[in-house]
Amino acid sequence: MSKILIIEDEEAIADLEKDYLELSDFEVEIEHTGNRGLQKALEKDFDLVILDLMLPEMDGFDVCRKIREEKNIPILMVSAKKDDIDKIRGLLQAEFGRHLELLDFRRTDARQIKLLELLRRAALLWKQRDTEFRIRNIFSEIWLLLLEDLREREIPSGSSNAVSRDRIQTMIAFIQQNYQEKLSLEDIARSASVSRSECLRCFRTCIHRTPFEYLLDYRIESAERLLRTTDASVLDIALSTGFSNGAYFGKMFKEARGIPPGLYRKIHQRSPKTNF
Image (tube, rainbow, N blue to C red):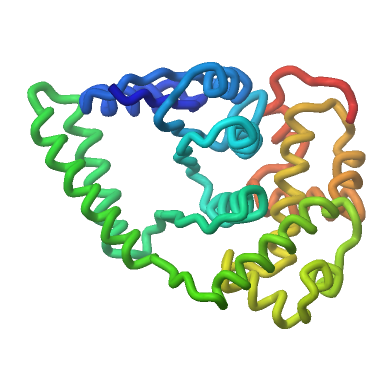
C-alpha cells in the first residue's frame, strides 16, 4: 500500500484530503506544522508528500528544501495564493536545476473552470451517504482534465530552452544570495554573463516575470519568514531584506500580502525567537 504524508495546518482540509485518499486505498499520515512534517518526512518512508506552503514554525519552501537535501520523495506543493506559482518554479530551478511543470488554477480557462466545478461537486457529494461511486467517477474525469492540461503545457527540450534554463537558474541563485544588497538589472545579467535584454527575455520566458518582480517577491518572502520567527523590529527586517526604508517596505508588503507587516506578525507569529 502506498504511503502519503500530508503537511497542512488547516485540520479540516487535511482531514478531507485524508478521507479521499483512504477511499483509494492509500495509507495517509498528517502533520500540521512545518517542523513536525519535516521530521516525519525524514524519519519515515513515504511515496508522496502533499505540502502546504503557508505553515507554522517552518514554511513549505524551507520544508521542501530540507527534504530534498536528504531524500528524493515526490512533493506536491499546494497553495491558494496566486503569486506562489512562479516562486515554486524559481525555487526548484535554482535549488535542484530542473524544469518543473506547474498547474496554476485561475478562473480564465474553460477547462480549469470545469475542473474547479467538479471539485465543488465532489465536496458536496462527500457530505452525502452512498455517493462513493459517483465521487470516484468525478475524480476520474478530473484526472483526464489534468492530463490534457499537462500535455498542452509541455515545453520542447531543445538546446535553446536548456540554455535559457541554465541562465535563469544562475540568475535566480544570484538574486537569492544577494537580495539584501542593492541590485541592478546589469548586476543580475552579469551573474550569467548575458546582456540586460537577454536577462529580461530569460525571466519572461522561463518564469513569466521580470527580474525585479522576482527580486521583490523574494524579499517579501524573506521578510515574512523573519516576521514569523524573530522578534526583530519591522524596520530592522526591512533593511535586512534589501528595502531602503521602512515606509517603502510597509507599502510593498501590504500590496503583496493585503495587510501591513505589523499585523501580519500578530496573526502568524506563534513563538518569537531571538534576533537574527
